[in-house]
Amino acid sequence: MTPRQIIRPQFPKGYADNPASFLMWEWVAAQLDEARHFWLCTVRPDGRPHVVPRWGVFLDDKFYYDGSPETRHAQNLTMNPNVSLHLENAEQAIILEGTSVSAPKPDPSFAMRLSEAFRAKYNALGYSPEPTQWDEGGLFVFTPRQCLAWTVFFENPTKFVF
Image (cartoon, rainbow, N blue to C red; front, side):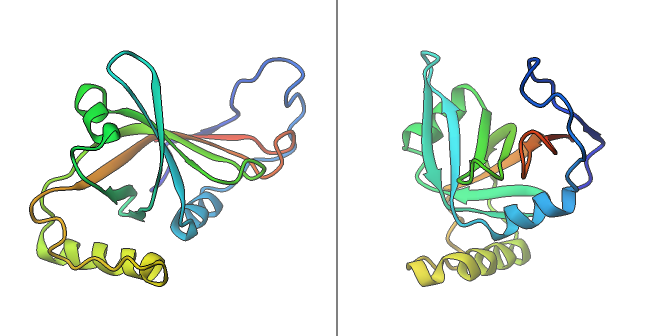
């Protein structure tokens, strides 16, 4: 994924007044590839937030995760696909915003890549899906719209726009 714009995020005076550098997207992408745990925030029909931890993989510039369409977060997506996705580390933060929807049945070659990526990350934790895992649904895809990231908040806060 290549950001079409890399800019400084806007903060109130006194937060990060004299940043010294920008992050590179390659660093962010590596963190997303390596991370095992993500926090997904959806919006309930009444406007309240709903946050859940998710396992997932970044492939072809999108985040794929799975789960039952009956879960609260999946039901929320049918009403409002706008979500945020965060990594666990607040000191070296990566905060993505975008949309998430139910993914169609993946074609066999992509299903194999997806299965292999999940296995590489989660097999040791007891999760190793077969390529046919998502034939009947239960796969979701998050497409980022923007990303805020930093390794030292006052030195390099960076906004990537896609």
